[in-house]
Length: 107
Image (cartoon, rainbow, N blue to C red; front, top):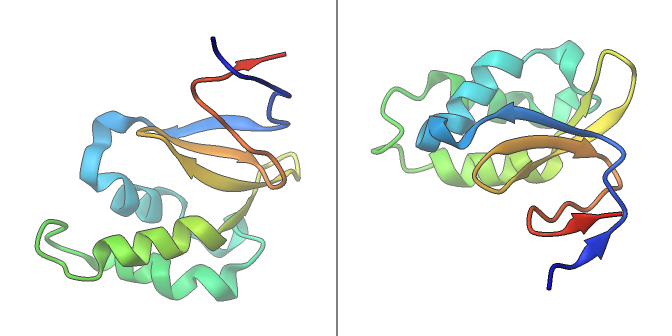
């Protein structure tokens, strides 16, 4: 039986899981601009680092940089909503105070 939860206030697919190990680099390249982040000063070094990685398989700091960025990034939508990143294979933007469970039925 699936769990039921209140649906997220914001749920936008940013990058599908087909991007695989390149999701962090693709995210940094596509969305890594100051006007997209509430907390640009906190995330800019991580964004710039991920943008410059040439070999994601060999870079020793790629995944730790991504995990850090994913945990602290706060993104502003065009409508002014603030969201956070959530990855379950796909990379999602969900509401800042939302929890998201891909296996749950939302009521």
